[in-house]
Image (cartoon, rainbow, N blue to C red):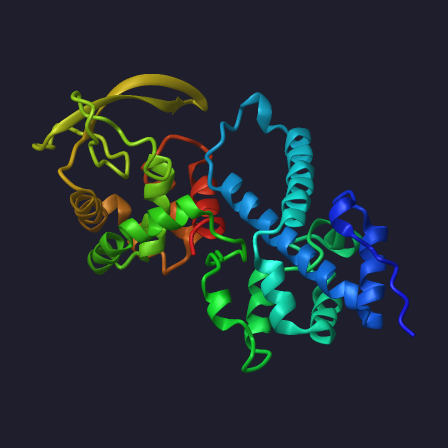
Length: 318
C-alpha cells in the first residue's frame, strides 16, 4: 500500500528543502499525487528561469543602490517564491507533463535530476532549482517515446547557451534582426550571435535607440559615433563616457541610418576595414575573445563593457 505525505510544495516557502525531500520520497514510492506536484514544481522552476533571464537581459547600473549583493540575494529569493505562487495557478506546462508522461516516468525524472542546479551544488541546488536545467528536462521528455509531447514542447521558449529560458522581448529582438546579423557575418566572419549581443547591449534591446532631431529612430544599433570622416546623417545624444574610470555625461554626435540593415552593413564594414579590429575579426568564434578584443581596441570606454557583452551573449541569446 502506498502512503502519500500529500506534500503540496506550491503552498510552501520556495527554499523549504524538507518539503522537497518529502516530495522526492513520494515520487520514489510511486504516490499518484506526487506526479502532479512534481510537474507543478517543474513549472515553477521553468517560470523562475524565465524571470531570471529577463532580469539578466536588463542592463543594470553597476553603481546603483539596488545593485548590491544583498539586494540581488533577496531579489532571487523573491523571484523563487513568486514562481512558486504562479505555478500554483498554472500556465499549462504541468498539465501537459502530467497528461503525457505518466507517474512512474515523472517520478524517475524528479529523482534523476533533482540535485542539478544552475551552478549551485548540494542542498542549495535542490532548493534553488529542484529539477535542474529546463532544456535537459524537456529533451529527456521528448526522447521518452512516441507519446511524448513533442508538439507541445516545441512551442516552449528556446533556451540560451547557459541553459536559461530566453525572455520574450529578447527572442523578438533576435528574430527581427537575425537576418541582418547573418549578412554581416558573411562580411566579417564574426558569428551573428555576437553582433546581435552587441546591438542589444548598445541599444537596450532596441528600446533605447538614439533618436533623430525629429524624434524618429536613428537605427544606430551599435552606438557608432560620427567622426570627421562620416558623410551621412547625424543624430546628437547624451551619452556616458568613462575618463580615468569615472563616468561623465556628454553630448556626442552619432551616425544615423535609414534602416537597421544599413546599421549592420556599416558596422560590418568598420570591423572588416579598420586595422584596430583585426584581433576582433580573428576571435575564432569565442565570445569572451570577441568582447575583450572590442574593449582593448577602444570600442567603448566602460571598464565593464566586455563582461557585460559576454553575459548578454551567453545568458540571453539562443
